[in-house]
Every structure is written in structure tokens, then in C-alpha cells.
Length: 233
Ligand SMILES: O=C(O)c1ccccc1NCC(=O)[C@H](O)[C@H](O)COP(=O)(O)O
Image 1 (cartoon, rainbow, N blue to C red):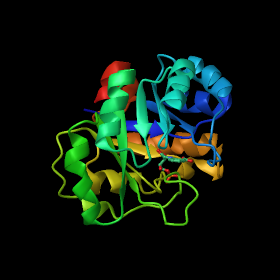
Image 2: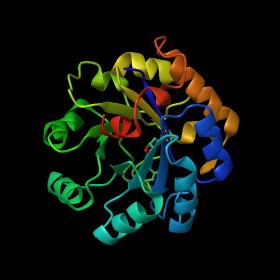
Image 3: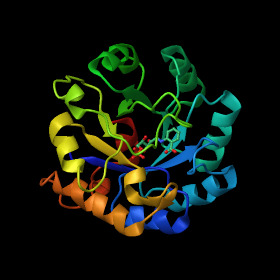
């Protein structure tokens, strides 16, 4: 199956269009006020309708309560929820039962010990996102532009679809895929000129570099599978 490419933290119509036209499979929208990529619900409504049917819409939240999630689902109409906080497996089951959407659980990685959390989440999440663990003094748990040691995942044997993120860019994405054998890649800082400001050429370069790692799919992978298939794995 071809590599899934996610551009995360999109917040303008122009850069969303660039990501969609360049063939991103997934487009991520951040709902976390301390983030420079945070979206208002009204902006989410507009960007969500623009992306409808053209890529998997990912709503990214951090330990959000039910009301916040319900508002996001109503306005963005996401295909999958990315839970990027300390959400427990019980909370994932609760969200699944209430919202009936696929869940991608972000797991912070610094050392191999961080993989201990994987078995319990693999039993309830639909996808796993391995992201670089944020420093203790970070203002947000992701989107920090720093990679983790991908070799931590080199012997991973996981039936669940998983993506890798953290400090990716056009220059290192091929190595990240080679070492981790991830089925998807996710980038935010690596396609920005300044935090929260996506750059069209960096978006295009990243997607080209990611596609080049998978000669079986020179074309954008999005058209090959339904939105639901991409969202759920
Ligand atoms: O992007 C953010 O601002 C963010 C804020 C709070 C929680 C998660 C966040 N991003 C999560 C993502 O999926 C990022 O794409 C991922 O962490 C990679 O980010 P980067 O290292 O900047 O490419």
C-alpha cells in the first residue's frame, strides 16, 4: 500500500489548496489554543468544506472534553480524530462510543521504553502516530520540529497502521521511512518558514520527497483508496 502523507497544522485556504493539489492524503487541523496553528471553529468550518472529499480530514486535539470534540466534529466534519494528549485507553473507548470516528493516538517517543504504552493503545486506536516526545518545558505536546531516534522503531512489529512524525522535512523523510517502515508520514514545522506559517514550496517539496520513497505510487496516493479506508487504515 502506498505511503500516506499528512500535512498538519494547515490554517489558510491558500496553503490547504497547495497541500491538496500537491496530493496530500491527509490534512491536519489543530484545535489547541497555545499552538500557532490553532484554528477557530469558524475557520475550521470553511477549511473543512474546502477539503471535503479531497483528502482525509484530521482533527487534532489535546485532552479535549466532550463538548469541544462535539463542536469540532460538527464544524470540521473530520474523518479521523488525532488525540495528542494524555488520553487513556478508557477515554479512547469513550470517544469512540460517543462520536463513532476512527482514532489516531499519538504516542510520544524518546527511547524504546516509550513503546511500553503501545500494546494497550493498539487494542483500541485505529492508527498510531509516533511523534517526538516534547521537552518538559514545551508549550505544546507536538509540532515542535524535533525528530526522535527512528531506530527505536526499526524492529517494530505492529499490525495496526502507524505513521511517524517529529522534525520531518523533505531532506530526511526518506530515511525516516526506510528506518521505521512507517506506512505514513506527518509534518508540520518542516513545511513552514516560521511557526504556524506554511510555505507552499516546502509543502510541495515534502510531498515530492515522500512520494519518491515509494516508487510503486508515483502519483498522489489519495485517489487509490476511499477516505474512510485512509482514515481507518
Ligand atoms: O502542531 C501543533 O502545533 C501541535 C500542537 C499540539 C499538539 C500537537 C501538535 N502537532 C501534532 C502533529 O501532528 C505534528 O504534525 C507533529 O507533532 C509533527 O510536528 P513537526 O515536528 O512540527 O513536524
